[in-house]
Image (cartoon, rainbow, N blue to C red; front, side):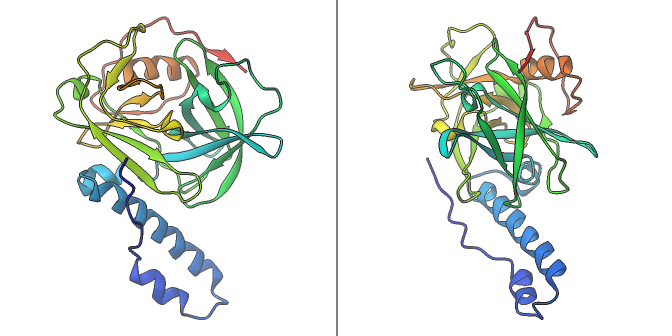
Amino acid sequence: MLKINRSCVDTRTCSTQRQDTRKRGRKTRNLHLNEAYSRLNDLIEDGLSEESASKLTSSIVSLVSFDGEKIYSQSTGIVVENDQFSASFLTSKDLIRKKSAFVPGLQIKVYLPNREVVNGLVQYYSAKWRMVVVTTKPSPHLVTACLGNIMQAESSSGLFAITCCYKTGNLLVTTGTLASSPSGLEGIMQSTCQISVDGSGGPLVSPDGNIVGMNLCTEESTTPFIPTDQIYDCLRKLAIRTYLENFTPLSSSSEVSPV
C-alpha cells in the first residue's frame, strides 16, 4: 500500500502562524485549510485528477471503536449526510462486530478531515450488506460524498481504494481493476485493490472521483466491495438522501435494522 508523504505545507498557513498568536480564530481556519490541502495532495500524487480528488477530501473519515480504554476495531467511513442536525457516516460492520458477537458498550470516535475527534453513535446496522451507519454532530468540515453508478466501475480502466488513517489523517491509496471472478456472495463484487483492516468501509473510487462501492476487508487476494446500488437502497430505507451523480438505482431487498 502506498503511503503518501504529507510534508507539503501551505505557505499561507505558515505566514499566518508567524503572526500575532492572539489571532487564534484566523490561525485555526488556516490550519484547517492546510489539512484539506494536504489530503488533496495525497490523492493527486497517486493518480487522481485535482478535480476528482477535490470531491473526496472532505468526504472520507476514520472511525475507531473502543472497548473501555482498548481499541476494538478501526475502519474508514464515507460521509453520506451532513445537515444542520447531524452528520452520518457509512462504514463496515467490522467497526462494531468481528467474527464473534457484538461487544456491548463500545464507544465510537470519528476522526474528521480537520483532525477534530467527535463521539459517534451507531444508529443502524445492515446484517445482509455488512454496513453500519454512525451518526455524530454536524460539521462545516464535511462534504456529502458523491455516489456514482456501478457501471462506472465496470467500464473503468482503473479503480482507487482509499483508506483514512486515524492516527495521522493520511489518505492511503491503492489501485486496481474490477476483478473478473465473482465474490461468491449475492450482490457483492470484487476488485484487485488491496486494503488493510482499517480500510474496511472505505470508498472504491472511479477515475472521475465518484464512489462506486464500499470496500470490505478479507484475507483473500481480491477485495470484495458493496456496489453503490446496494448502498443507495440501504440509505433510502434510512431516509438518508445522499448526492447521486448519473445514478440509476436498482431495486433490492436489503434488510436494515436499528441498533
